[in-house]
Length: 185
Image (cartoon, rainbow, N blue to C red; front, side, top):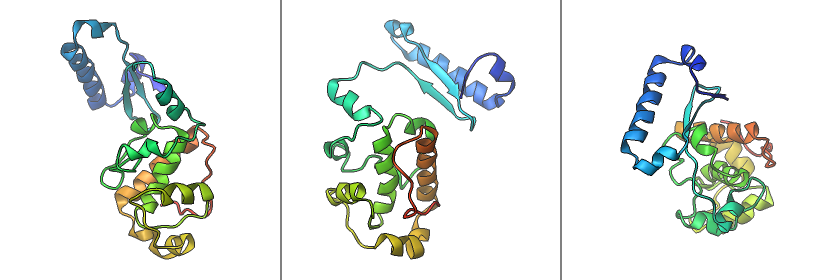
């Protein structure tokens, strides 16, 4: 990942450069005067994706525990959003940029909730326990049966999102394995 600077503009797409410039100007024009003290970091990933980040307020103790990459958040982490880590992962494409804000555990759950929405069972105890405690989850299919006969029922959006989430997990060396019981779309 590279920081956006003058040298990178020669290799960037002209439309991306215009979007970045416009977004930065809009940020400064729409912000109150004290916001000018904030720093905006613009990064271009290996996939030419542009990410805008601004410093956020310091995390409260409960937020810092849930956002650390090795912490396993409690069940209440997803209950605020109807029991889903990413409620709309079945209806819109997710970007690697937006996924970076999630912990390793949240990404692991988000990737598997795509399958859980279809009633897939899980071999791993941590997934089985997590989804059995979700009010929306209904076990319908054995993991092997789903993987062999029903994995094609996932939409293109769901398949792409599962791969995108996995790519982010792999890029950060997540401790949660991608075992043989999952099919890679």
